[in-house]
Image (cartoon, rainbow, N blue to C red; front, top):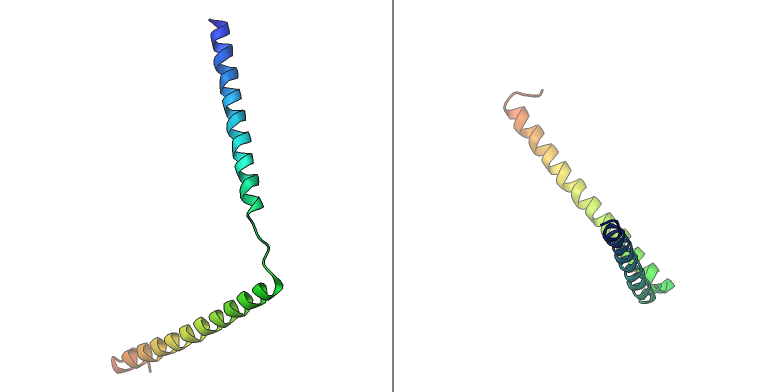
Length: 82
């Protein structure tokens, strides 16, 4: 009975070790596929991100301004603000 338990425990440890080594092998294979971008690619994507952030910022500023003016107008007409 004790030997059966020992086999089950060691079998579980062996299985876990095989899973871990298999996982690390797959990680290594995937990491070999990783390509470092060129300086030109980094500059281009950085420029695109900065322009996009600026455009979204301007858009939300205009939308916020419109909602603010609209709410102020509605509250003024209802007598909520002076």
